[in-house]
Length: 253
Image 1 (cartoon, helix red, strand yellow):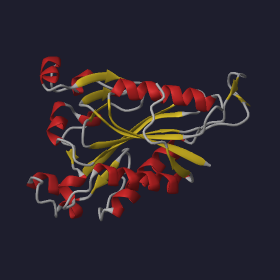
Image 2: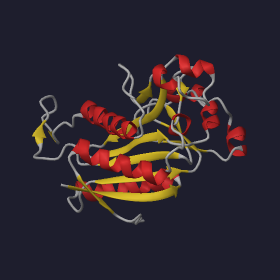
Image 3: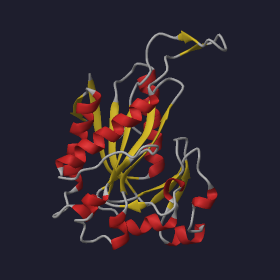
């Protein structure tokens, strides 16, 4: 099966969200196949369904001064940051299509259940494979979602303060939604070369003292965004079993 890649460049968060919803509706109606949006956002903090106001460290005035938008979303997780220099991927996939089943508790029809945890693990696997292409060993941490770099890899980071080299650092975040029709939304964010200072405005994912790292901090010379997007797109197809085809950045809205 083919999966179309939309390479959208830098795009406002709301516009990308609207596009996700439009594509998801078309997939659910059988009008198109799977899609993967690869893009960057302008500076934005987004809250998931478990988002807590106290995890916002900068007030609205400070966010406005720094040009940071705020959005409350329907994905899982708490608060995170997106911005230029970060590769964001939104897979819009039919994860639970098939004949309707009967819910044993309610007696009402429903779609087959999606393997939600397996989907998260495959997103992590996609990013781990991609990072390996740049010589970065990364992995998962039990009980947490995302992709992390261990201290033995961080020890070569000449730009990292000493405390960052003593504990795992997160290089990619993941937050997703699978709707009632079994179609996925939202996705992952890989730190390529963002301004890391913007993480100072939040307790990312509600966790204190969470180290962050980027490809730029670990690879010299750092890869450009187009190269990273190409590698991630290929790894995505490998992990999910899709033939990846380009869409030349066409926006449907």
